[in-house]
Length: 143
Image (tube, rainbow, N blue to C red):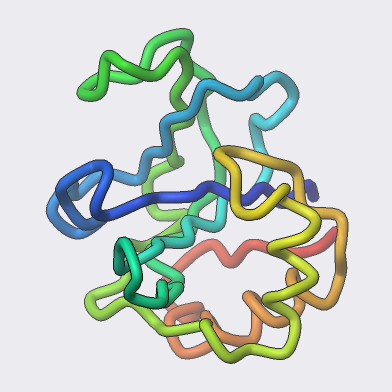
């Protein structure tokens, strides 16, 4: 199974993933070939001189690739999650100090938009984080 990184800038979007309340990601990057992959939504919190912190906000299996990004028309594409295949975390999980985060940051061109994740350390790290939530969901995998 393919894994994809989705970045959510809370300051830029003026809301949290929980505020949006949808298993969805928006981007101007290509989403071609992402269907049935796992989306990992990482939120950046903080602006300006303040150091940013990073959180896993949601994860889901991608059910649809859409050519528009409702409710955010400034983006060209959207991915939509399959019902029952993911979760908006009730409290986002901070990942700022995870050992695999610098590699993910480099791989995603400094957390730019929507990218396929190839580094297995980040994938296994993310899978480990969601274990407590996995019992009631179709759990993403690396296969």
